Image: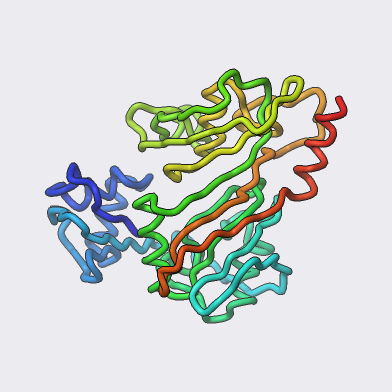
Length: 303
């Protein structure tokens, strides 16, 4: 995990407090990471939680692996949009888990990229998330950027942290949104009643989603969402709060009588824009709506 001090309000904050405010890590865990040399500031190990943050500081946190996982490369086909010596842009299928966990040790994106890239992956996020600078949920499809070395990982992570990149999604939500466009600016934190969910929380992290209506149908709306921040489940939580949960999202919504077979949100990351980490060239990547998305959309049109 890489964090940047780019807000004057963070200057002179203690290192442990800064990390706590910018992550989901516990204060006790953060203290242990610092004491055990897992935290670097500007590529130098810092052992004091009381270190005071300075503008443009780069905090590099390597999380301890709770369980040592033996990750094996697997020859899983990848839909590659672009590849060079620094980055790999893929179009992830719906249903594919991004990184392994105790319940998913195989057939994940990481298993696939370990096979494809071999040793050419950044090591910043440790053995469980090599090359992964951002993620999308298992049932969300679309574009992901994989970093092949630490230089590209730090550069891309900084663009994500400073919001100089552009990420757009398309989704089908339930009901008709009255306003054709809007901005949802509500902080998000872990749901205190269900740790598997996120929720609107005044004490949570800043979360901003711009949305635009593409087309309205009877009881459904096709929208585009532009992420200004990148919180866990951000679009799903914000659309639920707006009163229009994403179709198929049974975590933040209810089953739909017309789509009882759906068990996963109809959400697709179709647009990614950023500067190349080495050449600084502005790059734009697009992904067409996948078959499952078009199938639902066509059914809606014929209801």
